[in-house]
Length: 304
Image (cartoon, rainbow, N blue to C red; front, side, top):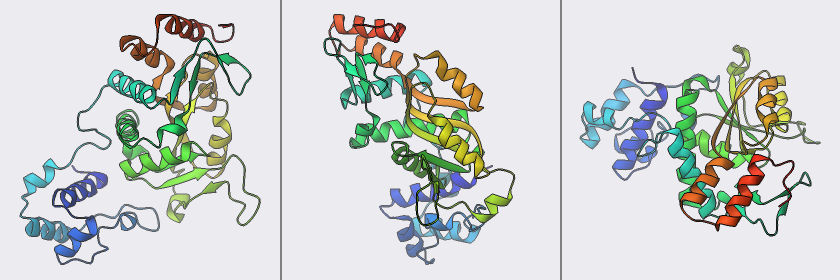
């Protein structure tokens, strides 16, 4: 049985294949040009709206597409052209971060982190959003990971965390065809005094806790996630999962913090994945790699 998201995905893919927008396809089929707009795929009360059988029949006729050809356009949500396993996603992510210099290694002149800790490694996931191909590859992988590990049908809202999680929340919401909201670190001091921005459908508020997944760029020990998760839960949402592009993966408190918050963390890569790719592809000299490995094994006692 086809899902709501898969049917709409096939319509979008058919339009793209014919060199049209979704509204252009509707118009060519003699339908209202707004029939296939994304805003019309979810009703005001949060329920999925399905295209009518007549509408689908008309677009198939005008494009001379058979039902069997139409169904081949449907791919599981979040899949890239070549589906990757988790190890493949980790390698892809590590290489993208290294190639865009969103990750830097420097053992001779260590970086000073916000915590005051000295580190031979530094990551800036905000930088990644400016690199279209790498960003696109990673968001496709992220959507695939979420679809496989959580299931798109188990998510009602994608919630980006202020500020670095907002663009990633938007990219993933678009791929998975989910409503997006974002969460402030604290309520803004004017207007509606909102801490959660966006629209939560009235129908969703009356159902048993709509499910939101928190989207962030990275996680160190996970302590900062509590502000966002608490805000979402206070708004009546169920939060059992969080997704990040990058997880440090070197602080034991990270797993415990997630357990205490009652959420499962999903990440594309860790520092260990980056070190593996950097070593295999000779991104840095052996001394730098050895120093980075020493830091990853014992970040609290590392001295360079």
